Amino acid sequence: MVLGLVLARCGVDVVVLEKHGDFLRDFRGDTVHASTLTLLDELGLGERFAAIPHRLIERAKAELDSGTFTLADLHRLPGRHKHIALAPQWDLLDLLADAGREEPLFELRMSTEVTGLLQERSGRVRGVRYRTSDGEVGELPADLVVACDGRASATRDAAGLRPRSFGTPMDVWWFRLPRRESDPAGAVFRIGRGRAIVLIDRGDYWQCAYLIGKGSDALMRAQGIESLQRAVADLLPWLASRVSAVGSWDDVKLLNVRLNRLRRWFTAGLLCIGDAAHAMSPVGGVGINLAVQDAVAAARILAPRLQGRGAVARGGRVGRARVGWAAREARLGRVGRVALARVQLRRWLPTAVTQGVQRLAHRVVIAPTLARESSADGPGAPPRPPVPIRLLQRLPALQGVLARGVAIGVLPEHPPAAARRSPHGVSAHPYT
Image (cartoon, rainbow, N blue to C red; front, side, top):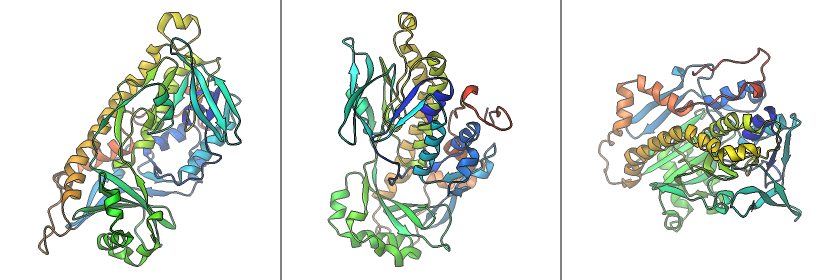
């Protein structure tokens, strides 16, 4: 959606295909980080976002058996937004869709699922096949297809691109619990013996992410829903009276955590961005924001080659624009592989660094936590916090470094001037 909006404002004809009829689904990636909030300001959408019901996180803390520790202090961030916003993703998508509809070159087709790729004999992708919710099938010629369809990208698979996978020590159970006004605001990260849970403040309820060992879903479900209720009550006694709201396993959804990355994000006529190019771990909640930065970088690099030409983007699913091989394809009015490679080159380092930090967190914090039996240490003193958490307490400046790495990222992106809208003119880049 972001890619389509930015390209359309830059003079590129864009079609966004979304297989669902609306955005009212229970998204879990609802953290809108400072880099994305700044982008919304630059696109002239900051005030519209402010009108969306949302909560703010200004410090990230972890509750351990041995105490509560600050992990990241967002007050140390540069720029206007010294926080992370928690906003329903469907509201953010509606905001972007409405902004896109204001652009004459932007078209959003809801209830339209991509079912395959149109390819030339050479293998070049030249568009997509689609099916609507009422059964209509058709073809949409496209100069470039942009696969934005997530971790299980059907578009990426149809092109024969296979990601390299990195092991993860956990999966996640998602469920809801009622929230009261007297509860903590923002988010809660609780680590106990052999258990960990994250609570995300959604106003009148908590979106709960309960970490379990990788591949242990079936075994743990066999123990009955009461085992989860007891575990949550033990971790967070103030929630004990509400755990019965999770009445059966039907209320608990499994997230099969993946961490992977394509070696090559493109082929002739096709570019992958976001989770289609690199699935992120839930650690840090950075996935949506990294995907948005991919979109902005792709739009900035490709827009000059697409202006005045037809292009299609796939919001939540696919996108189109001219693409091809260097000089020959420049003569044909196509964007060459070199331009697509530039998008990957631009975004590879922040992706690899972020995934490296996530893998470190898996190895140093999450894996030891989940491997520790809840009764292993007996009734004695609680275990010491992991080394990274102790280091953050000794050197508070590192809390600002971590805040910047999570909330802004390694390489924040800014839209081209043609895509900016501001009552005060073109805004400056606060992080450059």
